[in-house]
Image (cartoon, rainbow, N blue to C red; front, side):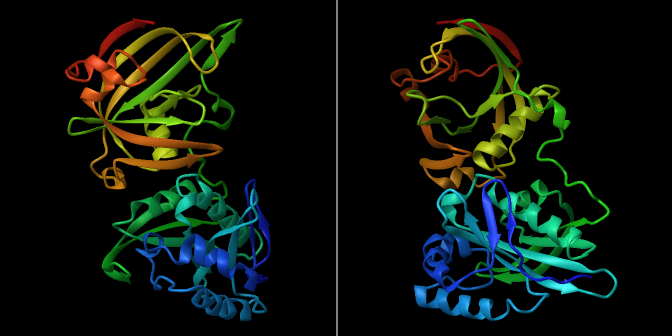
Length: 354
């Protein structure tokens, strides 16, 4: 082992560094005062910035200890501190294992920020400090935390029943871990790195697109979205990558856009669309496969009738639209305004000209 303490680490979007007392207000404002953030944590929601200051005083006092690891997560774009990641437990009986804990401000959920931070910490603990194993656990009722671990290359190892206690009470603990000899972190998708390219091409004023879209229903409502670039509603989904199946693509896209792990019920349509796009004004030839998705094992329905998430540099607004409202909305694909009332039992090939 080679303990060197909380050294500054940097990723594409983040700086992981030691806390200072000047971070108290950010800590209080961005995560420590939010009961949604602390719901599955073991420490109480901060009632005032003075509580955050006392916590920081304690943490800062330990920074001269070489085996103390506690990072502030600084968002490069603004310089704000938006969360915390730390080593919360260590064993040095030959296993040389480190247990990780983390939390992030709600405004920054759904942007793959925590996996980015966790990957950096894992690599530092392996390469610099000499740990052999890095582990983390989450409340079984908080699967989003488990997806962070999976995105960072950690494998689920098992469930400790009734072994944890946090602000939500006694719970089962789901453990994930990664070993140093697993020297390559698992990529975010299982597509070969040289194949991660969206399938589209442009010839003059014409564009070919290969996409997948999700039909997510809640009673007689469908989940639709729009962003700052589009004046219309559209469905969650995105382009298929080279070397990727459509089934993999739709699960991946929902994980990236909604931070959920949805299940495919069945494919509904392959639509061959020919239209002029209202944003880039190109003439599209688009192949899109629409999948009916099961989100019953996610927290999606509890997020409200309208909610906002960020993905990379884009802000997505999601809304549950009643079927009857589609005919009056600026909504694509247009065929869904009528076809939503009678979904096909078998996979159907269709075309649409606009």
